[in-house]
Length: 308
Image (cartoon, rainbow, N blue to C red; front, side, top):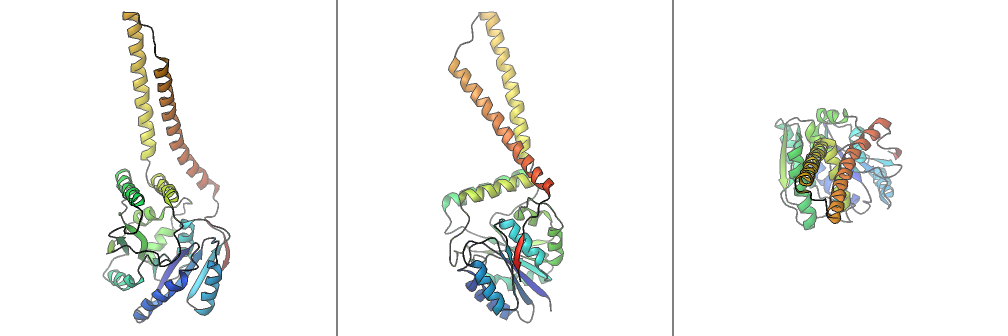
């Protein structure tokens, strides 16, 4: 019988693991004649009792396995570790907080049987989410799809069912700076989406805040577009042209009207403006150089302390 591997990254999820297993095992019973399930939890350096709960459920259920990191390495490291450990013919990634509805799995598997390689899920709304987060999330997808050749679907979750071939393709990308939403799209294959209404967490609090999501979105821009570098180049070029025109204007005014240059306040303001543009461009370039530096060091994406 084909095996479905369920990869579940966890960070401070002690309250959600039991409800997640209860909900998912109900679906497992319904699909018992189609698939055999295995569960792979990845403890990403949690500071609560997540690891203790994982040890308990692994002792109770033979199909449950876990990987525990030596420290917090981030969501991308957790996803990568889970995909590398998955042995199934089909692999899905889910959050432990039940914002990814397990009851969608039968429909997703049916789509796979119809010939699709990837069946993703997409939220139709953002109920319960702070308005400012929703605004910037929509803005991110609009901008990234404008400047990147890799299309990313607004509202798409990491919750998706993939064939073994797709996962092997994802794992063949050995980059250290990973942005899974982009990688899932970049590898291609035949993809379809199932829509569902947004759900609140079953318990606990999200570890994502506005600034962590902002940093994550910046990584998306840097990893899947060189447009920021082009913008920096154009800003520098336009600044140079305007500076040349301004110098020419000052020289002509002096020669024709003998008008001395005046206005120290405006001069200082212009200098500060140009200096700010230069620092902005250097910051953009520096972000790309930092990514290159990280890649060249070849450090492991994660370190495993314990697994079962």
